[in-house]
Length: 238
Image (cartoon, rainbow, N blue to C red; front, side, top):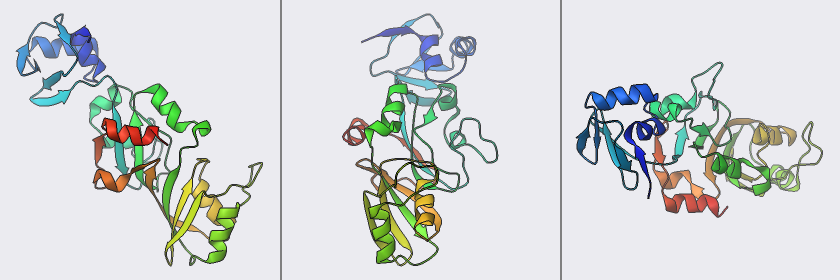
């Protein structure tokens, strides 16, 4: 168990600067487990803490672990250059607490994107040494053939890569649809592999990371959710 002053707790949860958080508390805009507080110096137990700020409830979380069903035309960057950033799809508090994407998806790629403010968690899932498998559904411009699947499983040579890259799994899901499982996470890897194999990726969707499937989260495009311990365990087992 740990206790922190109420202004520090609000700041840690992304409600703004310490000065602004103190103002919120003194103005009676903050309740702790249902009881309004006006003393920002009050020590508060963080275990099982539920804050109410502007009449909206927020459970205290030391770190946040989020899954987003990313739509197309959003950049996975905290400083997007040409399109809106994925953080605009989340509450403003997450920007204040430095939530970041775990890896990246191209602006036109849809599907599962993990986000967190836990540095070791981000590094563990992003590190190529972990070999975390990622499942993609790729729509192809040309029909899927047995030869295409064989090439992707055997490995294709990409420019600037020292050795061929191969899919762990590659299965036909439709005349123009492939399910591809990769663990390397190279730049534009699915698109480049399909191009090297003589086809073209016209749409790409990430369906799973490790054993955590996007379909199990029941998220519409643009929606997000907190990940619970069981869901995080599926990622840890990857």
